[in-house]
Amino acid sequence: QFESFRAELASARDVVHARDEALDAARRDVREARAATDECNVRIKRLDDDKRDLQLKVSSLEEVLGDVGGYKKNVMTLRVRIAHLTSEIHHAKEIHAEIKRDFEHEISTLKTESVQCVKDAVEHTRA
Image 1: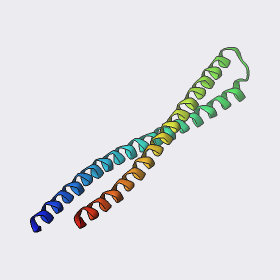
Image 2: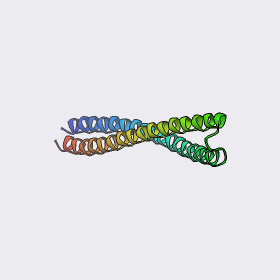
Image 3: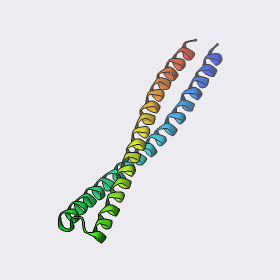
Image 4: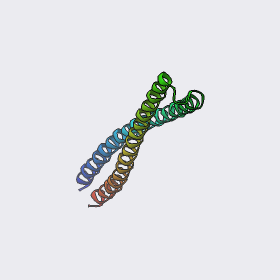
């Protein structure tokens, strides 16, 4: 019976070890997701800064030049660029939100799995 208990204990340890490896892999995924989120945040900040700069340029051009032929074209080009940057910012924010949702879901799943793994290991060693 002692050998049976040892075998069950070894089996439970194998289960815990496998769960630990899965948890380590998930943690690596979480670190990668955080890095991607940080990259998105940097990009969003840079795009916001570019947008503000371009808006100031547009505003300055409109004040100084008004509605003068060739300059109006420059103002319109800058407005198009602002619209494009706004779209990129929106897209980056959507990606950021999606990564955050996925990250929170993965953490929740891992917590549930870890709790269940511990319960299974305890029950397995008691049996």
